[in-house]
Image (cartoon, rainbow over all chains, first blue to last red; front, side):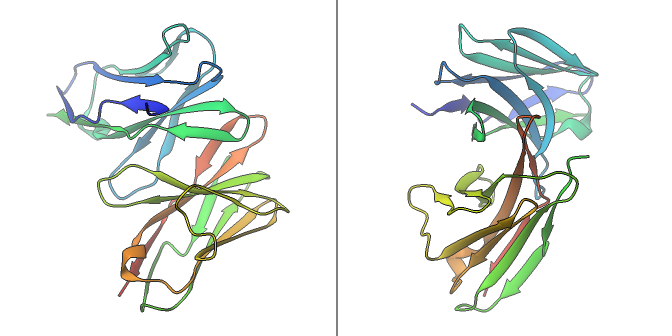
Length: 110
Length: 115
């Protein structure tokens, strides 16, 4: 079992819709959870991080964490074509250590 | 804040030569930096963890004698690809771990092409 699992996609949504990206992880002791966005040919950039169970909102992005289910998700409201990218889920089991999922490719169609 | 730079951004070299890539945290100190490699349309692959003042920790399958890592200061780590071959052509990305923020910030990446 991979440490961090994501559906590779591609996930395609129409412009203006909500995009839902999901991630599961295997290490129950994980404390920190991150979502990165990576455009083609570029390096990843941090979108959000979440530490506590529940929802965390930042603009059009909402991260959701459920430690009991070992599940973290990212919702993108009012999706725009510029949101088209690969989204990487990352989990930090301990300090200085971060494990990445393989990423979900999102396409937002105009 | 939290800016990480890499140099060079791209490099083309002949097979058999060595290439050095620098990773710098510009506005914070990074005790730990990470080196990743990414082939086209594939996910990030962690190559090694670089710790300031000590030897790097390499992931399984990564040759430490081929990919030399030096983390001489709290703001600089270097990766040297020795005797590069065409199969080493890839996108090399570093990240720096920010203490306190408990997260990694990525550099812009270095695209290496070995002819």
